[in-house]
Length: 212
Image (tube, rainbow, N blue to C red; front, side, top):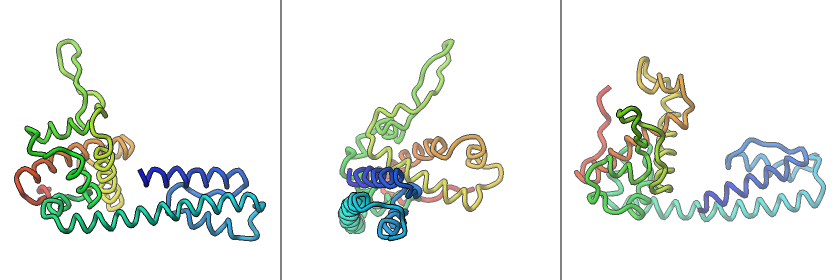
């Protein structure tokens, strides 16, 4: 919720300044660039425009402080729990995702399989029949939205790192990245991550990277 509020406030600031000729890329990392332009006397901004921008910046700073405090508390909690530390052995799973699974999801042992947990998150493709044959469609997106978004975000980070380093020639990732946007490619790894997390939680094991 706090991250969403900050994003909305940043977008409002960008839109406000863009109307007066001050433009910067999206994202929290570019807020400082906007703040510098607001305080730059050479920027073509009138005093009321600067004042409104400063109010946006104050809100962003307050939200960022609250987010940082919350993340610090979550990291402490994650370090103190062996179960949460086990989940974080998987690439793409940080303290926020681990704590979210621990606090929001039911005990993962209540799911019969990793696929059931993934389906609860809305990461399993819908099935429909055509001519008597089952076919897979898009993911249902009918499950727990917050954890699903965190897993997709974690999958995206793993994919981006792999893309920068170069996906293995002939690998599934190389073929998918050549045909589809990263966000669509991330759905399948997020599904796999959910199933693997179920296995880690129910078997008490740490993540082991599969052999290439």
